[in-house]
Structures are given as structure tokens and as C-alpha cells.
Image (cartoon, rainbow, N blue to C red; front, side, top):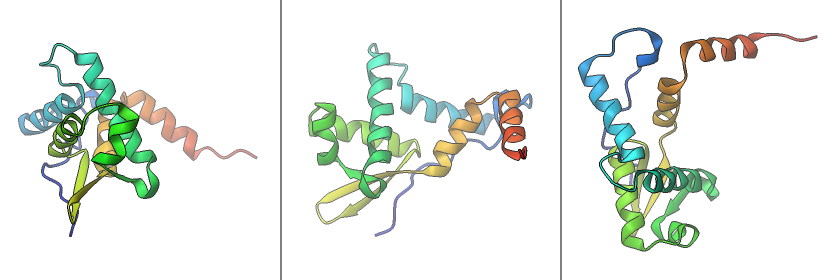
Length: 138
């Protein structure tokens, strides 16, 4: 079965680039950031750490994918709690879900993670990083 992706990627133009961001792009970006940070909850820092840890555990897993049962023990959380956070990250477009029999496996959406990183990197830093990667020593 093909990997599922439910939402479009974050906008291609960074609000930090000095260009106005379109309303639809701003709404998509806000949805992605909300999925990671969940600002409506009182325990913001705990939820942010949990979701970032989930992304990290999945990325580090063999084959770059993990099921809920692979993630409950390292996080010390119940299956319903882990499933809830995986669903939010999947709906935000940061994870893909593939159902195999009774198990669902999750993997990062590299383009969504890269787009998010690009949005959060100031333009000057991006320019200096590109300049560093293009320089030749010798």
C-alpha cells in the first residue's frame, strides 16, 4: 500500500526571506508549526519535546520507519497517547503512514522537514551556508 500524505507541504517561500507570504501559505505553515508545538495546550514544552522526540526516533529507526509499538517503550507512554501524537504529525504532513496488516508504520516526509527547516533558517544564514558549501579549499 502506498504511503499516505494528507496535507500539502509548508509554503516554498520563507516569511524570513523578506517577501510577503500568501495567506494560504501562512495557514499551512501555522498548521505545521501547531502540530509540532501545540500552542493551545498548557503543557506546551512537554508536547513540543514529545513530538520532536517522536520525529527523531522515527528518523533513527531501522529503515527510517517505526510503528506505535516501537515508540511506546522509548517514550514511556501508552499506545493511545503515542497514536494521538503520530496522527497530529501525519495530518500536518510531517509523517507518512503506511498500513501493513494490523500495523501502521510511520516515516518522515523529508521534503516537509526540509521545507520547515528552510522556513526557519534566516536568509543570511542560508546564504552563508551555501557559500561555505561552494568554497573550494586546496
